[in-house]
Length: 142
Figure 1: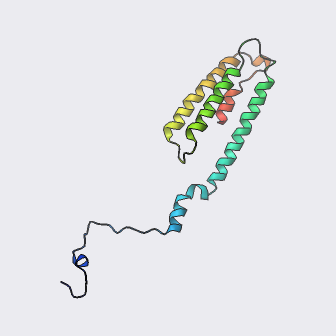
Figure 2: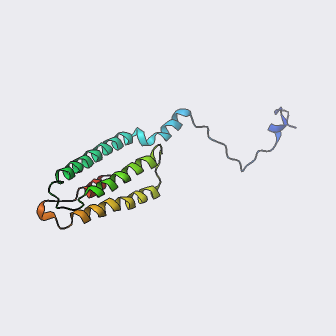
Figure 3: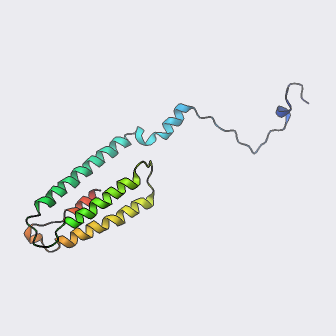
């Protein structure tokens, strides 16, 4: 027994395969976790969301303005309903998540193909009347 060491646990040979754990200070740990919002990421996301909302509302107003011009038939109403369903389902599905998985983005893109196809079908061949797709560009903004 070594006279300078007082406990048998200290006397035991050190394990060379064991790494010493780094005790990160709380402040640097918080800074490392908040990196996404620290550089303006949250403000940028809020701005992009607001801009997308304005674009969607502008196209919705355009669609409402085109209601009287559409020839008898379905119009772009069903495409807007499908767009609203996809948008609400996306918000509900991702509510409270800090990170959204890649497969969720692929699923959103596939779901947005439905209102885009419906809108393009409803407005096909009506450009001479001034009727343009409205739900499709709104889906692009989402």
